[in-house]
Length: 306
Image (cartoon, rainbow, N blue to C red; front, side, top):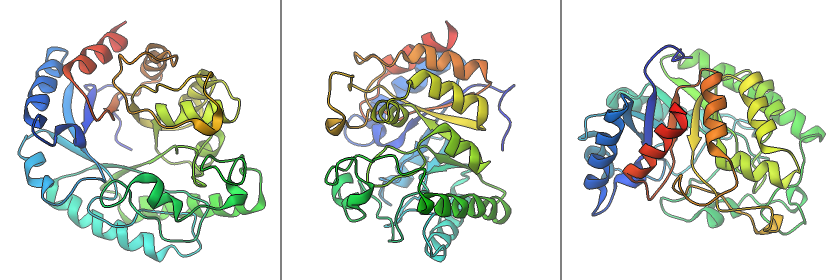
């Protein structure tokens, strides 16, 4: 893994924020704000990106990482019985990464299914795409998209062993890329959920704060304890930072993801999260915020420097 513990802080923004009529203005404002604090500013190319978006995003001339897979109809599932499907998608992405100088990529890679994993947000919304993989026995109540805790089952153990082996294969075959597997939002059988699961993989981790916020509430765990456990027991080299509107007043089955600006009213105590990341030497943050603004850069800098 690239060691950034003693290097400049990397602050990227998910590419969707810079598309559309206000995209260029947003980029300029965010870049100028980041430069005030000496951050290495960049863009994380998101898997919702279309082929025609790529030249426009690269023309900004800043560092780029990838939320893989890029320009693919299917994602990765390293827990599936057949690994060859994911291998083909990895190979296609690596060829693209070489052309556009991507050296770091994050991906979701573990779901309780043997079916090909559709990529959402490009041609179909999240629930429609992921709904194809719905299994009632993985659901909290048999019908909801939200997961029950299946991590102690024999099937789960078999699948996570596959994931660990295939991550080792990935590091061996494509060492020129630093690959981060992300903790999942707890829906549709997505399975990289808890700190102990991520630690078992012995592979670089991208810690998504919004996903962990939902997971902790769904399974009655303390969010900040889980954050600490991830940072202490896993190789957390990247953090997806965003706010969530969901609180304990909302029933579990009604929860969703975050991806809101950092100043959104919330009960996550994000400054405490950023402080813990800094204490553990994690210095690569991605603001996964579709309506990002310079205010988010300033809000992050305040958390980082407090």
